Image (cartoon, rainbow, N blue to C red; front, side):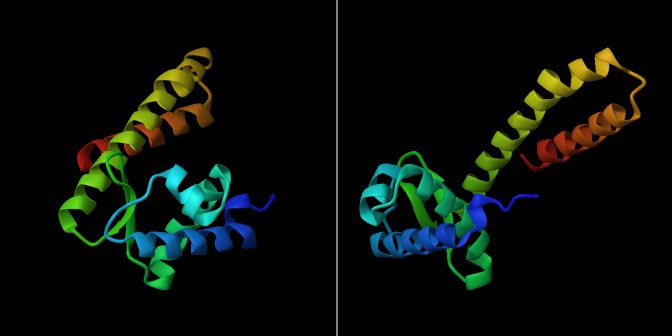
Length: 136
């Protein structure tokens, strides 16, 4: 399997550049265009750097990063802000799972209702949907 472009040395370097810039901007946040200017990275480099940064946060003991439309990306330890962000992300994931079920999996299951693999996928995704719905 090919290595993810989000996990390479370049993406790690981008993550560290983003971390430095966000630390300097604290407590304010930065939107993607501001991050691209401050880090001198492209939009896609910022995107892959953010993905790696989220992977590195716990490993390196960095503060949690959240995104809001008003403030952009910012570090926070405020439990209320974290809960609001987490709830919003769960709603996004719940919507994605529901659309996958209704737009792809259900029509596939209708074509071949006896397919064991499709029935398994339906059962698993229904379970994921139910769990996300409880969290949200």
